[in-house]
Amino acid sequence: MSETPLPGDRPDQEAAVGDAEFAAEPVLLEPVRQRITALAAAALPGLPADEIPAPMKRVARFAPNRRARLGGREIAAQLAADPLFRQRISGRVVADAGDLGAAIAAGMAPAAADPVEVAALAYLARPDGWRELIEGAGDAVRAEADSAAVAHQVREAEQRAARAEHDRAVAKVEADKLRDELARVREELGQLREEARTTARALREAQAAQKRASDLLATEKGRASRVAADHDAEVRRLKTRLAEAEALAATGKQAAKDARAADDARLWLLIETIGQAATGLRRELALNPADRLPADFVAEASADRPGSPERSQARAQDTDDPGRLDQLLALPRAHLIVDGYNVTKRGFAEMSLEQQRKRLVTGLGGIASQTGDEVTVVFDGAERVHGLPPSPRGVRVLFSRKGDTADELIRQLVRAEPAGRPIVVVSSDREVADGVRRHGAYPMGADSLIRRLSRS
Image 1 (cartoon, one colour):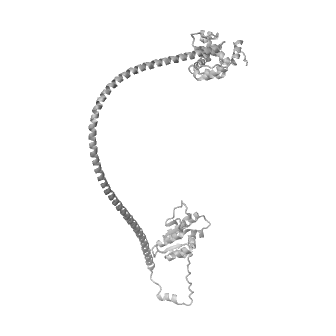
Image 2 (cartoon, one colour; image 1 turned 180 degrees about the horizontal axis):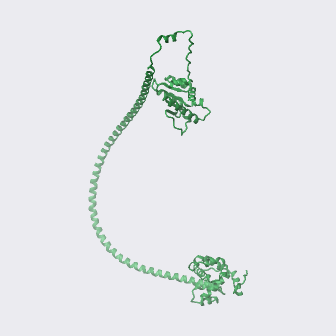
Image 3 (cartoon, one colour; image 1 turned 60 degrees about the vertical axis):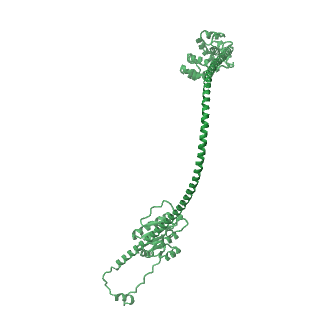
């Protein structure tokens, strides 16, 4: 591999560079490698800018005290790979080294020179026999290191010997003290043995007395435990009986309270119904002075007058007649109970269940506000949904529980009412109608309520 000569370069230098390019790099000791890096880092800024390789331009800008530390790896790689760069650096380094540099360039190593410095300069200048110079310097460095290690070991041995002598003297003094202490301890031990024998006798006597007291205490504890166990058992039996009695009393009180509340509700409704019926009757009987005589009524009922038109018979009202429903709802304190889905599926089957419920409950709210009656609508709970809108005032919306039907809930509502109260049940289910009729309610068909709602 050949290079174009630079200005100022000598042909013999280029030949040396070319020969060195193919030579294998020697193995350097760490101190030698660090010294080479330091010398190259110091000489790098002194090169002309065009002689500094591109990878070294960044390193050249480092501060002097940081260049070798931060760029040492790049400098070493460039020196090994670029013979021309190494030659330029060596020119600077050898010139700065003075007589030592000139001697190394001539292939000689002064005996008094630092072997690390010799090896570093020989690596950079690479004169004839530079590898031998590096190896000799390496041997000298290793020899110095071995000598230093031996000297260090000798110093450590001397220090250990001095410490051992000191420890021996200290140990002798301590041994004398221990002998004196041992004599004193033996004397004290004799006294303690005598005291121990006396104490042992007293201890045996105390243990015997304690055993007698323990036996007596165990006997008394057993007797007290049996008494306490019998007492606790009796207390538990009494507490159990007391708890059972309290539970029975609470159950009886609650049952009596519930029964009394139900009876009071029935009695109040019955009295209220009777009172309102009596008020309505007094209002109906407050007649104006009669303008006809009793004979006129007999004549109307039992005789015909010439030219008088025939009287029409009153039209019978069936269970689907909204007029009949109006008459029942006009009774005092009437309670209207509606079979919800039975009505909606006959009247609003085309709507969704939610819309059916909403329309029926809204219509019942109007009836409750017009009549003032109590209104209850019952739906099967199997289709119950959450988030229902609030019910209108006067309308009670119920869903049957799981396992029950709306029909059974309707019968329970009818049975709960007092005898004599007007109860109107709207359902086209024959079983529901027959069941509520046996308990005194008025069954009406679903069509009567549908017509009544359409009229509102």
